[in-house]
Image (cartoon, rainbow, N blue to C red; front, side, top):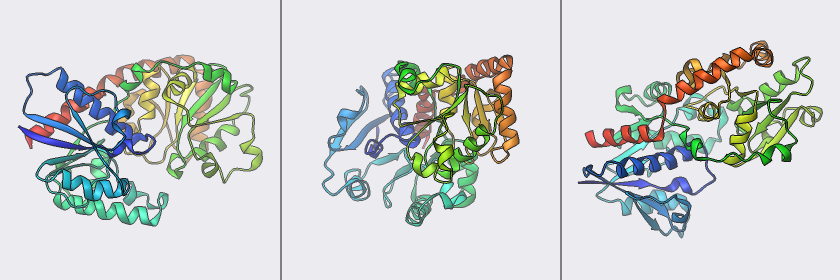
Length: 364
């Protein structure tokens, strides 16, 4: 029986898309093992920094081991983790990984540090380009989240694309979340009277462009744009003070998943104007809440959403404005997007991704 240690650093910070992937995939792997008791070929142990085990939903087939991190998370991952995992395989699910470790299985979510370096600090670019280069020479197997990312990573790292196994993200974690509709009262929102977007401070999320396009819409009366995400001061620093305080813009800051589910469910549509995505979980989350998706035609987004989204050019105000305007008047069209979203979600689940991960590790 081969033992795999799982790098549990993903619990060390507030959850991001990459961290959600690692967390949910670990949960999905445990569920898969739990319902397949006849599987004894692989054994998994999750290594986490001390004090983090309590943050994990109970795992029944994956043993959780805490390791003290007196010198910080970076030292924990780069020095302590490879020592603890000496002689064992190490599975990394977030992109970050020990620089030097044999028998290592690495997930690289996208090629953004190569494709869009302007979005990152110089130190970040240097570190991750170097890390990915070393990984490309020593890792036993690679995983990524989409065909788009596989092609881009293969190009930059000079690795045969066939060496990357695609293990998708999913959104079925939202099915277990109860909607918190108190958020409507807190924000003064009316259901079906707002567009919703979710984005970080990264310029690639293209939130400024969405704001400018939305505010130029005419005859929208009581319709508002709800913006979920941190770092609003950085995202919107190019906007005038008049725009930032415009009553048609509702900035929520960070919300929890219960509140987000309510916001998805009550929106006219979810708008995803991103210029670059290795995968993009929010459109799938919106679909799982029966929310129509209006999305950028860039990066991996068309690959992931298929025919379950209405696409626009994220650099053309007229393209986005036309799409938003149609969403306000064509309810039959929106109903079609909702139905397509339900069908599209059948292609994605954390359990299915975990099963693919297990089978890929087993074949190595």
